[in-house]
Each structure stands twice: as C-alpha cells, then as structure tokens.
Length: 274
Image 1 (spheres, rainbow, N blue to C red):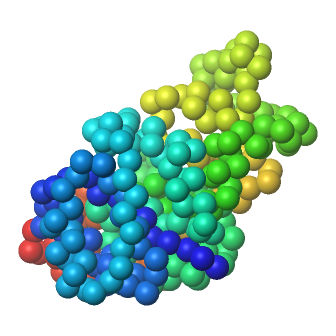
Image 2 (cartoon, rainbow, N blue to C red; image 1 turned 180 degrees about the vertical axis):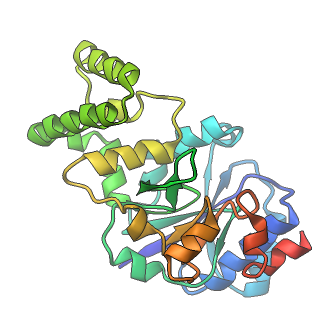
Image 3 (cartoon, rainbow, N blue to C red; image 1 turned 90 degrees about the vertical axis):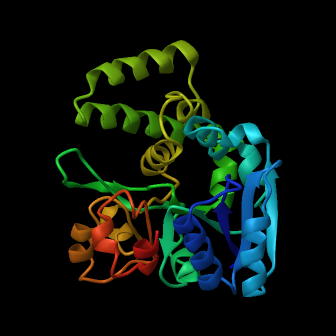
C-alpha cells in the first residue's frame, strides 16, 4: 500500500511544543512518505531546519492562505475535493496537526484494516464514551473514498442514497433532536438533497463530525467505532481510554495539552519543557 503522513502547519512561529511534535512526527515516520500542507505565503525556514537534522525528504503541498485563517476556513479546506485530489496517488493519508503526538510507526498496520475513516473516540458532556470516533486532528483517511464523496459519485447510487437518508432520519430521532430532524426532512424535500449537499448542510459543523456521520450512515463505507479506535488515538479523557486499552499507549494522540496534560507528562517528555 502507498500511504503518506500529511502534516498541517500554518504558523511561521510555532511554539516549542509544536516544534517538538513536528520533530517527533519526522523521527517516527522517517521511512514513510511525508508531506507538509501549508499556506502559499508561509515562511517554512524553521521547519526546514528540523527536516535537515533528520536528513529526510519532504514534499510540500501549498494551498491558498485563506484556508488557514480560522477553524471555519480550515474546515472548508478539509471538506474540499481540491484537498484530496492532491493525494490521489496514495491509498491512505494520516492527517497530523501539531497539537498531536505519535508514539510509534503503526501507519501500515492501521491502513491494512481498511477503514475509510478513523480518529480518536468521542465522549458526551457527562464524560461517557460514545460509540463513535473520528477526531480529525490525528486521523486516517482513505483517499479514494473521500474523492468519490466530494466528487458526488455516491449520489449516483440511488438505492444506497435512500438507505442513507433513512439512516439520517433515524439518527436524529434516536438523539431526540426533533428540531434538527424536522430541519433535515424539510431540507431533503425542498432541495432534493444529494449526499454531497448533506455533508455541507450544517456549515458550522466541524469537518470530522460531518465525515464521521456520513461514513457511519452510508452502507458502502466503513468507519471505526470507539472500541476499534481507542488503540488508534486518544483525545478526550485519556486516563479512561488508557484503562480501556489495557493500560497501553495508542498509535498517537491529539490535543494532549488540552485534555489532562498531567496524564501525558510521563509519555511526552516535551510537555515538561514547554
């Protein structure tokens, strides 16, 4: 399989912990294809100095600066066909933001599991692990599936589209979110909604949530649930995930400074140096 690690950078002045994350990524994945995604105008000198230290070859894929000015604009990039077309020659890409940390090179292992999308497990507001996973900051994506979705090719499969929209309605009904249920029914009939339009229906929704919902509802795709994903990545409640994972560290993690950094100190020494 031909896979790649896509590192997202946007600042010419990254923090010490971000540089440590970048270095860790380069070191762990030095035998994988490494690609930096960044704005056209970004001065990457500080990153290139680290790359030279590890003596690795890294490709750059640059996009318009406007995609990197906010979370909303970044979501727009990640929901665009333009982004995934750049990686069409790869089977899988691992999205790696600089608030992530990788512990070991298990990229090929996870790619062989043939998920279309996988990310860290999610929790509800009561601190209970949901049966869903897909945080985008450290996530694995099957390139061909994303390209099919964002090119509208799944909309040609009418039978599966019907099943998909029945699942959409069931999803909101089970959540008792009747306001969104009515909104979706109205939108479906008023606009003759396609699957692709549905992904962009809630513009305020983060890209990882939109993609998780699609991959979990559409019959022809495969998304990892929380039990399958907990050895892939931790984000929220890492101490709980550590117990659930038989006290083993996962492939990687995301937002380690946001969610219980005291837990991560013994596994990420760079936290003490920030």
